[in-house]
Image (cartoon, each protein chain N blue to C red):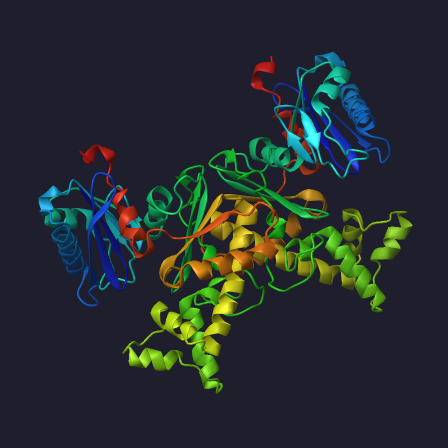
Length: 320
Length: 320
């Protein structure tokens, strides 16, 4: 048995996998919004304990625990720095050591985006491919690359596909730059645009659904519901996002000529297959070799890409 | 001694390198515009013979000859297919075998763009880097990628950086698509735009210089001369090209986070260092990690990147 945790800014997702990499237990808790590293780590320990209960096994059955963490992650030292999404995480903190004391098994850390990419590559939609581009379509647009079976991150910051320029001089991106793919396709940018259109007097159900659900942000579920109701503004903004994703993802494919493109992330997973097909269609006019497109597929592990991918950090020698 | 040939649509460039990879001879001839494969190959043999004369060595001193060829190149069989830039090259033709008979040494083939990238990586501006993006700024905008010391071409068609979309719905590219980087930065697209502006009554010296030089196309030298004369249209179109290159190259850097960007090709080499600095500056606002930009440098081998790179195809076992 091994454990995996995907630590996000809003939730902690944990899984327990058996020795055949089958998910036998899972659990989810909210990420603490106050306190500091020890509070976050206590919640992580609690979540993996919940997942063990769900699996019907004792926590001592875990031979190792992998964690996908935000911030700057040093896998060797187990230290996490600059995790601005986490409360009070201003200084470098030894996450692996502190968590290991609570869970009584070795803990290995990886970058949250990269472990999710690895998860899809090894155990998800990328199985059988040698090269892959993962597109995490959510609040922002993140990504990851596998080339010839190995992750490519360049000098550490590779995979920032959300910030390729698809419209020179175009819309302002949450990152401050102009014309990035994320400026059109990221959920945060889409919400900003929707609020601006409402101020201009345009009508939409998006914010009514948000209020009914007692949310303060346009979540993926809210977009899904509005599209289901054929809300004109939601449709227009999603069309715009898909056009941007089509151009941006096709551009990366023209450069890297990967076998497989996996579409995941909050929005990607929630909207699912029909929208993945729409992205594939939007890519087509921009592909340099349109007669041999990559395989474009939804993330197979859905919300669990990160947590399942994190289990891959547990070294094979610890598996028996 | 080894030989290298860069076979282009307009010229055949040959070099002879000594065992320390120093260029000891070079020669250039025009690519035949009529006839067929055997005519082209005879001219290639003539050009490398000229380079041997230039080096002061007998042709028998060559232990091997590498060729960078356009078209679909099969390195193992030595066959070239679909070389539309070459006269009468409608059927697959065994270039390596036919050329080897004329030059009396083993001939190895590679893709013209990729051998030039390898040349810059191993013997030129990329020396000391582990990862590199080469940008060939010429009639079109081509490119090549080296990651962790090895070329990356994906399923065979990678490196098409000219056809990343930098302006969704933007200018028509010679490839037929819209908004590609090449639609703004490629010399062919720039000439089309200049001709359109002249038809609209705009003034420029570009075509006067072209006529004086008895050319039918706006060559890199003509652009250079017009810029030197501060021709307003030339400046405006080059500014536009540089803005496009800045956005496109920065986008690729955001995805791949390479150490080094090499700017070469006809225009890149002719305009040289000051324009490479301008491209670097145009990249800056689009870089996701602006505090750690890649090293942006002109191609060190200039016009000879391809021919010198082709010599790297000669296996080391043949070098003694």
